[in-house]
Length: 113
Image (cartoon, rainbow, N blue to C red; front, side, top):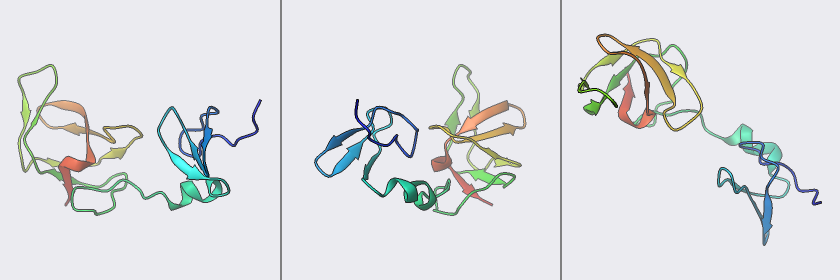
């Protein structure tokens, strides 16, 4: 049994060594031994398409027409979304859009207003 530290990003216990680097097979995160303490502190927060830092409760504007999965609806460019909530995952914004309902958005397709 190895005594390698767990992944600082996803806490997986299956990290392995590749030369001087440690690699997590579950999330793909790479780090060096001794840097795992600082990895989470240095990780940037969620940023919009322009690089502005987003936080819970912000208002954002959609910058691209987005098809709603499982529906013929479209979230039009310029739609303002108020009171967002940041979550973990690929679609890192939870919100409610008037006329559509609850949705998850990628921060790449919004800008802070």
